[in-house]
Length: 222
Image (tube, one colour):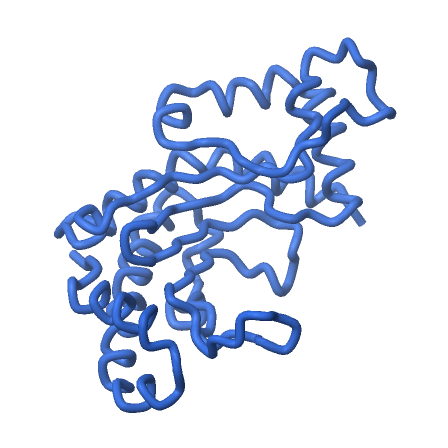
């Protein structure tokens, strides 16, 4: 069973205080080993999660990792490298409106995530319309006990309900969201445990119904 090695966490700690090309080049072997470690965890999660969600079955683990190199062209922070590993299970390049599972690995602040992050105007409008129209379905998903146990809802919100909806809409509070991000924090010890991949897959399994809800919306948008 795959898990994150303590040496991978140590590498990220060192990188955060030595974020420069000279140090990185001198520690390229450690980076390569850490990257392969994350790929191994990703492969194990995909294998387990595909039993529940067939859409991830054909994903290539190495292609699920985001580059560690930062795009600093428009940033005041010119640090050349990210101090974390990011993994996305879902081909957002082909269809950016579809759902995905996200793994963020950084010392003392790792998390698993999903939901609807930074949606375009059409997707956000369709999401609001669907939760207003199909409130029962939406509430059944987000009020499911394991969903409530594992996930915290976050995301930027409007002060007032959008003008296209009644102020008395029972879903008013949810309609204010400009994005609907679901976060589950995971400790370094949990990532390093032998059952790490199984644990992550279990968390993502509870996210699957919400992802199906998102995908049903995306399928309706041309």
